[in-house]
Amino acid sequence: MRAVAVGRLVRAVASDVTPLRESPAYRRLFAGQAVSAIGTQVTVVAVPLQVYEITRSSLLVGLVGLAGLVPLVVFGLYGGAIADAVDRRKLVLITSTVMTLVSVVLLVQALAGSRSVWLLFVCVAVEAAAAAVDSPARGAIIPALVRREKLPAANTLSYGSGSLAVIVGPLLAGLAVSAGGYGTAYAVDVVSFAGAFYGAARLPSLLPGEGATRAGLASVFAGLRFVAGRPLLLASFVADLDAMLIGAPFALFPAMAYGHFHGGAGTAGLLYAAPAVGALVATLAGGAIARVRRQGLGVIVAIAAWGAAVAAFGLVPQLWLGLVLLVAAGAADTVSAVYRSTMMQVATPPGMQGRLQGVYLVVVAGGPRLGAVRAGTMAGIAGTAGSVIAGGLACIAGIGVIAAAVPALRRYDARAAAAAHPLVAEEPAA
Image (cartoon, rainbow, N blue to C red; front, side, top):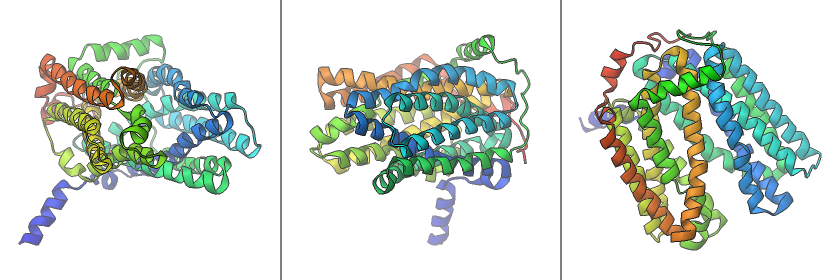
């Protein structure tokens, strides 16, 4: 009896893989993206390493991230409008081709022994622009492939594969650069794009949905007005900014590794990897996450837990305990992300999915970059640990204000919302 009970508990908690079984199209998209994401993470690590090897300048290494910020914002918003106006399958094939060509350029320059930093920055900017169009299109595709009630499960699986890529990609990058140089690392990325093409090439035709309009500034502003006119969606975006812009400690990991925990580069690597491990753990418990109906309350609790874990991380002197807290923080952030994504997908008409995914991308990717500036500035005033603690506590206060100001977020019920918005595909595409 005990074994049966344990088995039932495991099945109830374990990640729900029904979307992979029910929808061959989603299964191919998921598998292809999982492979290509690992290659992308290899390049994400290899480019800053190459810039530092050429220049020995930490400032220029920091500017690598900023090189992609403006393209990310501009093309994230406009790319969402494009995704709503064209066949999303063809769009993903085009963006995958552009990103593959960027990786080929990186490979060629590495094999040629180039020491051109400006070329690396251009590649980062172009890749960011293509990815900013690709990501909203892929996010908008999921509701067309998966049954409405399985969207939380599908989002959990997608975030889990991304978290695995964040863990595996940097490790693979270190091995590739050490064993064969930067050319080997970029070659891994080039080969991995076969996964992206595999996932997209066999998708069904995904023509513009009901309510779609021609891509342009008017379309972009229509998407922004859609968000502004829906307090629930607006609150979910502000909640993410609260967590990432105010509470994110990532920019302080090197200083925490050397100063607070008295370690080195290896310690910093552990700190960077720990939140992704937590995200992967949350994915493995995706069955429990997907069964929660009060998803708005789940966002509030998860972000409060994120802030508490971050603040505690700044207080503890033991590395092992700090890593445990970062794992908990990463798990909480993933729970919040799954619920926010699902709420947005359910509330958004098919013809607006791309634009909302574009806004989501700008918030999710831009928040941590701006948060790095916040964290660094505060560290100069309150010290490294003080900045981490203050950010975590301010994040808790911020989500409390959001919860009080937007009752609809606290009261959100996934089942009632799905019944009120019957616009997501009932039957998965083949």
